[in-house]
Length: 349
Image 1 (spheres, rainbow, N blue to C red):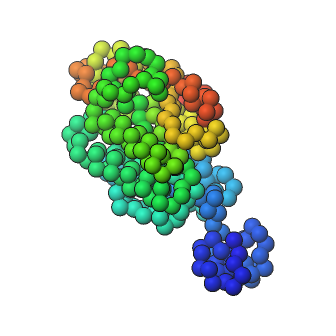
Image 2: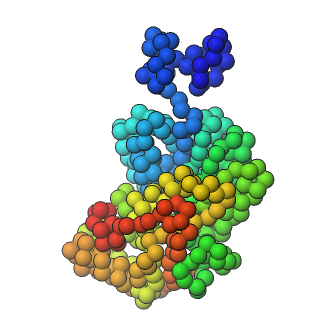
């Protein structure tokens, strides 16, 4: 954009805000450029950018020419804040087109201020077991925080809102593999219920304000820089350091472990939205569940160590199996997970 008189005062205007390295070759910018060029059509806001999945997604997005990422995170201390600061430090050191804001999704005005083309909402309180202790926090952060994001998206003409749901919404459903059309009336934790509520609000805002909302039901994501409260990180760390691991139940419970790189490709597919879907949810899983016993054996193989096991009872809130049917995501998002569990665990060491 380049206004005639230099008085429109719009931040994308190269006359009012002359930029360095102007992609249009404006002589005014070459002589006076002091600002970074802004591409609103290529501006993406990522919430939860300091977290495990968020930092990997930002790393992928920022490698695309002319993409600008505005990331927000409040450094919630649910797990080690130094891990999150390290993730942000890595992104800042590698990319000039990354802006970080330490803000809370309950109060942020980031969308109102920056008016992005697309939003990826990954910020949420995580943890099934922790949600049993503090259920009200999960309603406040996950539901109210998402509504704040949705309202700003509706008010500022955001083209596409991609948000993180969870396989937890399937709860104690016995039919497997889980399919997006299955009923989700058996949530087994406040965390799962908060994710189900998020999907309801996304559908409502899409219906009311004609915005695109795409929910992604993640299935047990693991990989480098993984969350320290998740089994893959905990087990690998324990085995490497000869620390006992807690094994809940008889080991027959199954999880559809999905490598973070594959998850990021699924998010990219949702951002592209090639079939122009208006309001959908998709499973992002590996389509290959593994029993806890087999998972422990694979961790032993990867680390070359033998597990010291503390046998424990199944915990409240746990489910017996997660297993994703991903045909819908294959069709609409070109989602095709390729990372085998053993290979992904080696990368996670």
